[in-house]
Amino acid sequence: MIATRCAPAALAVLAAIAVVTLAFADTLRASTSADRSNLDRGRYLVKIGGCNDCHTTGYTRAGGQVDEKEWLTGHAVGFRGPWGTTYPPNLRLYVRSMNEDQWVARAKRGESRPPMPWFSLRAMTEGDLRAMYRYIRALGAAGEPAPAYVPPTAEPQTPFILLAPQPAKAGG
Image (tube, rainbow, N blue to C red; front, side, top):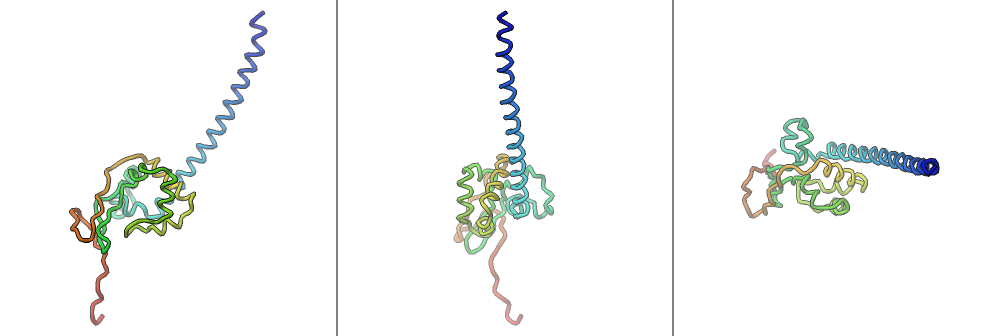
């Protein structure tokens, strides 16, 4: 007799659990789809934005044929000019030092030494910057930090590319 009275209550509880589970599964599917779309957008922006050209060792030389697991791990070859010598940082480690809002704020401020095209980052929408951040974070930490900035009065101890204007030759 007790089992018969409990059965309707148990069925009601099971039905409620099933409804909540299905609703949660739909929400999870929707957020997973949105997350995947956001990561795909971030990957696309990193790729067409030329981020790998400087921030991935060998990317340009290989015509872009570098395994994605190597992307954005920085480069030990510097860029030297009147500003000193800068190195493309390991973005996978760099984004770990800040949260998403800090990344967006920094990108919008556009504080960077040459040859970083900070003006391109600054021109991006907040949504694009957030997608890039999420994509870079999703790649996971890998590699080593890039060498530190070298002021113009010091000689870099690594290979570097000289980016300095040369005077025009007389007579043409």
